Length: 509
Image 1 (cartoon, one colour):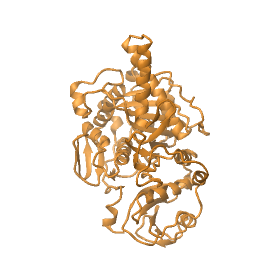
Image 2 (cartoon, helix red, strand yellow):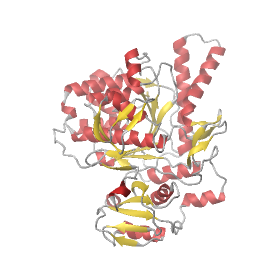
Image 3 (cartoon, one colour):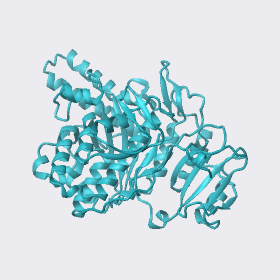
Image 4 (tube, helix red, strand yellow):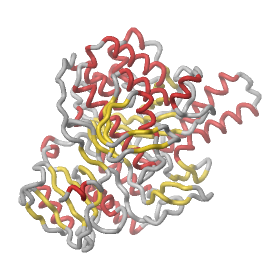
């Protein structure tokens, strides 16, 4: 496939970079910091290696009714499911207002905004061998039992505002009491909504403020990212050239917050967040960060000022659970959506989803916990759309995932009529299995990597030979989509899977 074709892809690996192998530090410390990095701000790690400093100062939230959501399933293997929320707050975790200098650095504006900019569900199996993070787009349109049709990023604010109003009407006058109880109601409402959407029982809650990206990035000396094209956005402050570059804290926040001017809007913003976090985890695991006392102290300060966790979370035990976590086993995904330009009940621009499809996605991705050694050795599947039908690569990738295979990347290729599966070895096990399920021929292509096969979807593609279980259910039940999908209605748009292994950052839009 030509280089011109490859430039059309949403995500691709950067050129391999020479890395200096520094001292890794004790495995327990390295692993714990990786966990924290997965949670954006090293939630457990900093607490683990600076117990004396953070032991009594990490902010916590109580009475969140975790694990009580009705109609959802608990993980069969005792896995831990964590809801990570990025709060668009102008105060720190201790409730202190940010300084004018900090607010200016964040490009966040002066007014308090309680919308949740990032919503991510993280699954860690009982043996602690992996971590899978699944992002939910902020504009995902859902139906809330209390407030009706709305974007999921507004759930927290809606419940918080309603509780504040109720308390004031009851005559509660203490500002601190009102704020604490209203915030608790906002968190509870969001926890219930995510549990209902995903079908997953949420065990723990972590909330990270805007300042968190800045402080942690600076604490580790900057994080490396890669862009397919140069970008400029006055709203977020993003102004970056194409290619590999190292960002400081303020730049990192602009990088992960930009959504204007991106080809897929919020979906590309999510991919940026995931690529950034993967690069952060990779850096922590691959360098001597943990041998630097100043870096550790800075990370402890970052966590103290930026992170809130539920009060029942035993962070130390959780850290011990993750002793053997490696970067390649930290993976990031995004829920499938049916439209990125849908219209809400009140005319607003929304991202539409089919809840049955989303629950099927969570089941297929989280159902078996960490992949077996045999599965991990099998080829990944790249899917490329060679037609004019938008979202077709994502649709095929979603089906492939439901068949228990790992997706590498999705994107577009030069238009062609015939569909084909390309493999380094024509007898590749995954290629042959795909051939049976998709009804496509396998061609040997020695330019393909040995650990991946590519599905090229042409104009003659007629769909899989056997239907996915959730697709069969959708044909017999009413749609669970809220709002009006846009021009790409009915196609499952699936983002690429990103992991924290390998050399160099992943290049993104």
